[in-house]
Image (cartoon, helix red, strand yellow):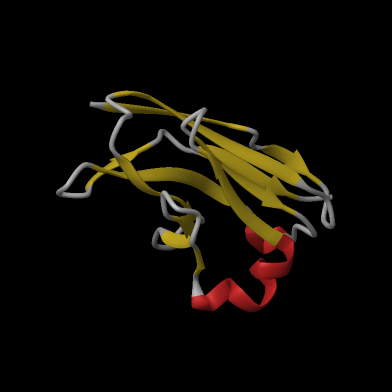
Length: 121
């Protein structure tokens, strides 16, 4: 089992920044890709960004143009933690952000409980 604890969400004004963290614990010796998804009210959950164990990053096509500049995913393998630095936030970024990791040879997915990000003046 892998347990994920997310933190860093909150209320921020448009143009502001937040840094989300997701720490993994439990059977953490074989975590492969880590990533962030988000789900806005009434919408499906969507990929924001992912990063492999070797550091290769991927951003969703729908957000790549902006997110490669304003959003950055990173991970600290020693701490088994993945981060999402979000800058220049907009109201449409409001959503619950979920951490996801893929574990083991079968890439079994594990999800965090989600952290609310609200961008509003």
